[in-house]
Length: 141
Image (tube, rainbow, N blue to C red; front, side):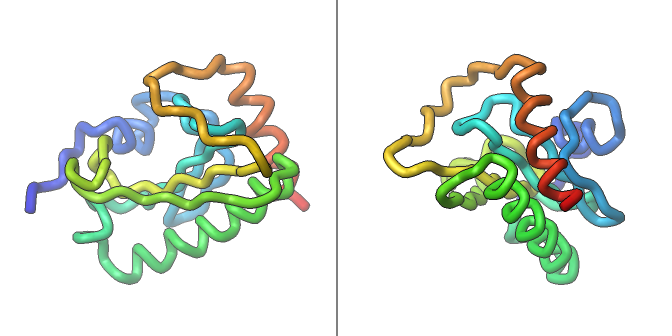
């Protein structure tokens, strides 16, 4: 297995070297808007501990990550008025992983609306903020 690269984009976000539109944070995890969303309201949830993927994350860190995924997923569904959710997690290049810090995709879904293809197209910051505002409001209850 390859070693963890502390210069990956999510490690840089965790160190505040790169910006993000934060949705949720606790002592163990961070959730933020995906800048290349496949659906409006697409959120990424990551652990604060360094781990490449599900193959090397410590079980206790994975447990905390999944608790945050569930919390964020509920808020995404309510905040984005979604009909459902897709939760995705990729491991290693052959499995579709691009950023080698474990991350879970939370994608709101609506009946009859397909996911957008991953084109590398970046969303406008004001659109990300508007979606994040809805999700943060749902988290606040």
